[in-house]
Image 1: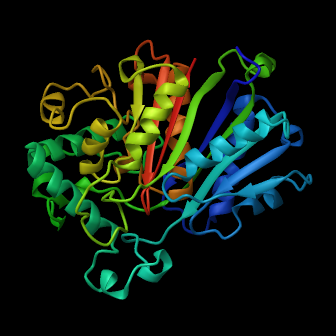
Image 2: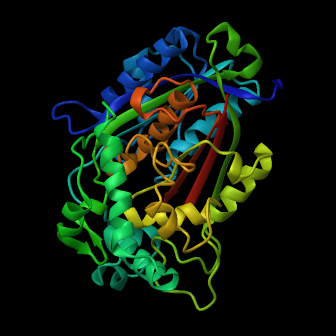
Image 3: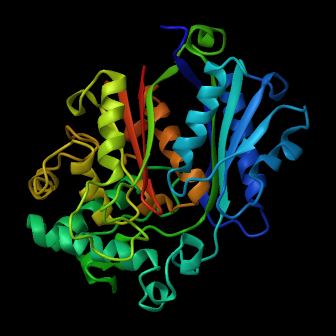
Length: 382
C-alpha cells in the first residue's frame, strides 16, 4: 500500500426510516458511535470530521453530542452527492497531514413528500416552478420517458428494477421497506409522473451513516480488513446537459456529469467496469438506475432490457447492483444516502452481509447523482 492510500477502517449506520422524536443529529451520532466501535477507535483519537445534511444547517454541530474535543469539524452539501463529498474531504484531510484519523458522517430528517422548493434558490424563473418542473418526481419521469423512447426500454424493465430493490431490501435487516413486491403489484401501483409509478420511486426519510478513515499503511493497527479508497471524483454539469433543474431541453446535448465522474474514477483507480464486483447506483427511481447503468460504463444504452431480463443485476449475477435494496428500499435522507452506499460496499468487501453476500467481492463501485446536476463516484477495493 502507498502512503498516499486512504483506508476505511470502520462504518456505521442508523437505519433509514421514520423516527418520531429523534433528531437528525442524534441519528448521525449513533452512526458515528457504531463506526468508531467497528474501527476500534475512541472518539478522543479522531482529529477531523466532515458532515453533511440538507435539513440541518450546521451538521458539524454533531461534535456537541459526540464530545467537544476542539477538532476541526466542517460541513459540505452537494445534494445527493454529499456522501461522496464528505468521504473525499475526510480522505483529503488525512492526505494533507491535517489528521491521522478522520470521520465522515451524513444525517438528515426529511418531511414526507417529494422534494421541492422555490425555483429562485437555483436561479430559475418562477414559471419553471409554476409548470411543475421544480418537483423532482416530475423531472425524473420526463427523463426516463425520453430514454425509454430513444432506447426501446419497456415498462416491465422499470418494474424489474423496483422488484429487485424490494427483494434485496427484504433481505436487509436495516432497510426501511422490507416487504417484497411482485412486478404485477408494481405495475398496478398508481402513476405519479409518467411512466414512473408509486413503487418505482424512493421516498425521502430519516437516518445517518458514517465512516472512519486513516492512512492505509496504518490501518493494520485497527483492523485486519481495511478497505482502500482507490478513487473519489465529483463533477458538476456542463453546458447542454439535460439535468435536474435545467429549465429546458438543450439544442445541443452534452453528457451527464456522471459520465465524466465515472471515466475519471476508472482512470484514477486503474481499472475498468469489467473489474467491478459489486455496484451501488443512484436509484432515486427505477429509471435512474437504468440510465446510470450505461452512464457508468456497465452496459451500452438499450442493453439494460436484456440484462435485467437475464438477471445480470441480481446478487448472483455478473453486475450485482444495489444489493441492500438501494434508495427504493431504504429511502433517501439526502445527507446520509451516499455513506449508506459506502456502508454496504465496505461490508460486502469484508464478506459480512449474510444472504446478500456477493461471492469473492474485491472491488466496489458507488455512484451518486443530485441536483442541480452533480455526480460523484467512489471506487473501493480490498
